[in-house]
Image (cartoon, rainbow, N blue to C red; front, side, top):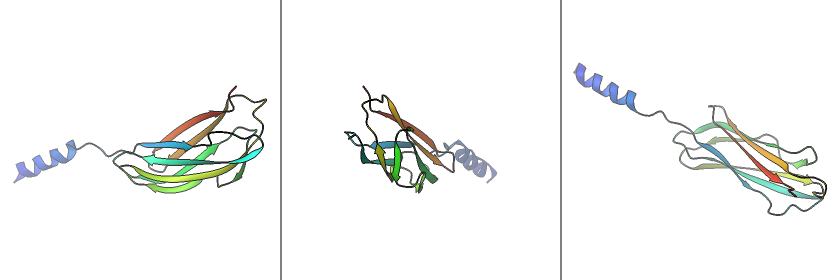
Length: 126
């Protein structure tokens, strides 16, 4: 009996730990129109085998760009394992790109159980 319990315990200890695998996808506008509000949509995804818990998505905009609507950060809650998705959307006012280059927009996905992802996209490149 002890050998069976010991063997079962060894099997349980040998199981790999569950982990999250968070990522972010932009559904950004393909064309930035100067001096016009644009919607930026983001998909927060978890391809891991453990749920990402109590997550929020934050957008970091260049100083020349202003946030028109959408909370920042946006609470998206738990993201299920194995391909779970949550969405965040903001409207931003984008000034003229004529005199600005390489404006980075950075997104952060941060969850209470240590899951984290960051992605940067450059708009207004010359």
